[in-house]
Structure formats: C-alpha cells, structure tokens
Image 1 (cartoon, rainbow, N blue to C red):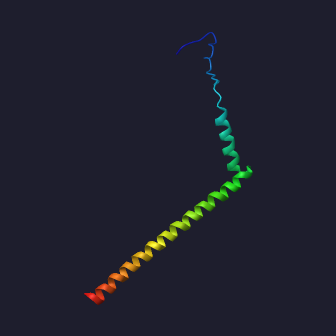
Image 2 (cartoon, one colour; image 1 turned 90 degrees about the vertical axis):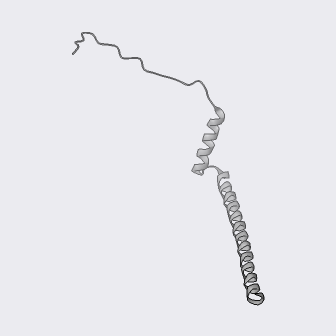
Image 3 (cartoon, rainbow, N blue to C red; image 1 turned 90 degrees about the horizontal axis):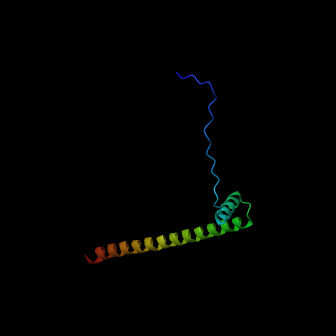
Length: 87
C-alpha cells in the first residue's frame, strides 16, 4: 500500500470540438424530422402520392396475374378438349 502526502492532480480531460460543419447534412436531418413529425405541409401530399402509386402498381400486378391465370385455364381446357375428341 502506498502512502501519499500530497494531493495528486487529476488527469486532463479530453475535450474535442469538431471544426467541420456540414450545412447540407443539417438541413436534410431537419427536413427528415419535420416530415416524420408531419409538420411539413408537403408530407401529406407526398404520402398520398406514394399511396396512390402503390395502389396503381398493385392493381396492375393483379390484372396481369388474372390475365396469366385466364391464359393457363384456356390452355388446360384446350388440351382437355383435344384429348377427349381427337385421341
């Protein structure tokens, strides 16, 4: 064990202050926060536009699937008719 008669000084603390400031990054972060909070007027129209696009794409995909299913059913029926009457 060590006996100390004098008070030892504390080690110096690390205090780093960055000098670089990215204004564009700051604006983007503020804009993102405002949109997430819903305080930006354009955010509602943006959400509505995105929702409309997704619905349109979903509708197109469903129509395409219906067309493919109809084509497959017609091919199956044509094959059945062929085998029943010609084979």
